[in-house]
Length: 207
Image (cartoon, rainbow, N blue to C red; front, side):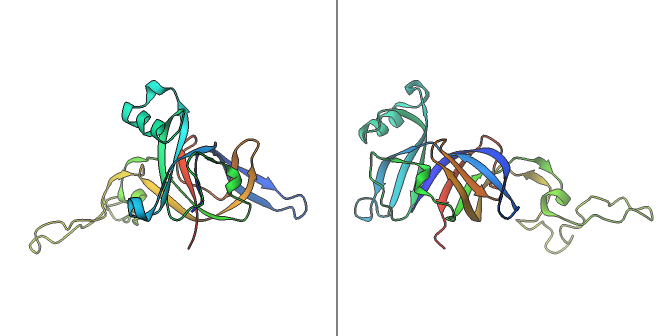
């Protein structure tokens, strides 16, 4: 399992001088992520690799977190610890860089989607609006949400107005367009979840 943590810088487009085609890409800054721990079936019951991201001052993380890093030979303090499940060739103490990926690799990217706040059913669930004519006052209302006598309640999970966005989203089917090891940049074809400067996890897509 190949994986790395990065920061979404934004989107741009790449021109192909030979074909004249334009490709929309998302630019992700993925700094070298030190491998903190490699988990195995024998010791932990499953295979995974734990990596650290975003170096900070030691006072900015808790003592248990600092002790966990120092116990496994990581000298600096890091704000984030992320685990990528699956078999891996990584070794504790080394650093994972963008060079682990190559153009053409299929990946999936996870992040916290942009929060939209409180939204109605038309925006949140793509409901159709009601009629605008003949004195109707049901233009953007949700309509009926249940019967009165039976079952005399609203079923759980009914699509209604509420908070929209701000949840973890995984975008699959993405492809690495280019890799820039000098600037620690990954260019992924298409859009990925989250706002600018939001943290994202890039994993290889195995199925």
